[in-house]
Length: 157
Image (cartoon, rainbow, N blue to C red; front, side, top):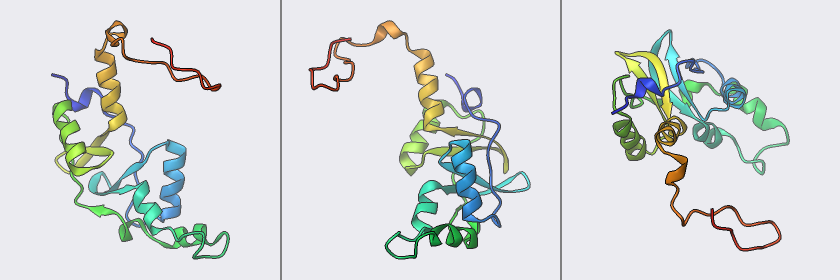
């Protein structure tokens, strides 16, 4: 059975508890990630998700135009992050990591050796591992291509 260390991302984008949510949002956008491990040095102290940032952002109906970015630059990661986030060691089986993701309803798990962050495993990484195991010829007959824009019925694969 394959383990997390074979599929995890090792070049992890991280934030510090003192960083602003504005910086975290920028890092998420540039790194195309939705979760950021929060570290002090190499030690994992929590996680920050795009949902945490979204929940901390005032509605466009509650603040003047352009004020949201200024607010995010004043709020610190430590104010909204999840402390003591669940993590897994590198030797964790992928099936176990997938179960933990589902159980805790999170999109990614920090991979730690002790408390030191060594990687991150996401839903996408696990799907990539599963897809690598599948043969393209194994697609069942009931798989369909998307319907055409003009409203035609889907064609069989």
